[in-house]
Structure formats: C-alpha cells, structure tokens
Image (cartoon, rainbow, N blue to C red):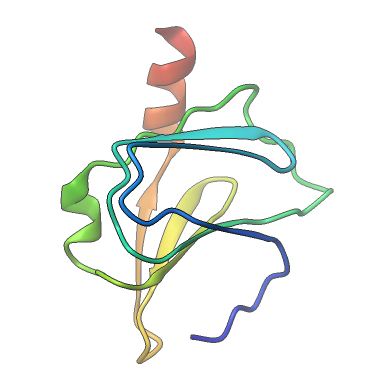
Amino acid sequence: VTHIYPGLFAECEFLETLEIRSPTSFRIHGASFGNLVYISPLTNVQFASACRVTLDRDAFQCCPDLVCMFMPDAFYCVLEGGVRRAWSAHERCAASNNA
C-alpha cells in the first residue's frame, strides 16, 4: 500500500488500547487488527481536543490486514487495490468528549 501522507506509524497488532500523541491524542479502544495505525501530522488542521476515536471490530471487517489512515474528520481503510472505505469520526469524537 502506498502511503500518500507523511505521519507517525505505530504497530497495533492485537492491542486492547493504543494511544498516539501526534499532534493530538487519539485513544483507540479495543483495536484488534494486525497492521499499522496512521496519524496525519498536518499542522494546518485543528483536531478536536482530546478526541478519543473508538473503533469497533465491525469497522475493520471490510478491510482486514490493511493500513488505516486517521484523518481530521474520518479514517480511511485503503485496500491494496486502491479501494477506500471511509467512516466519519465526528459522532464518535463528540460522544467521547461529552462522556
């Protein structure tokens, strides 16, 4: 898979909780997939403060063993063939921040 955006890569194979701070903290709960999590370091984007993005396993059933790129408003699972599936993260972030 070709990574278009530069950023921080971290292995998250079979991890229950993964927290990445670049540039804003993302806490991924129950992440159980054997590939890389991608955080975009775009400096001209303001992430939600302490946004905790919760990803359920159903979201990854469409794209196992792939690279997911976390963007300001969504995360993209990029298949090797170039096909993309996107999920909005606004609702998840709002719910986590209000909790």
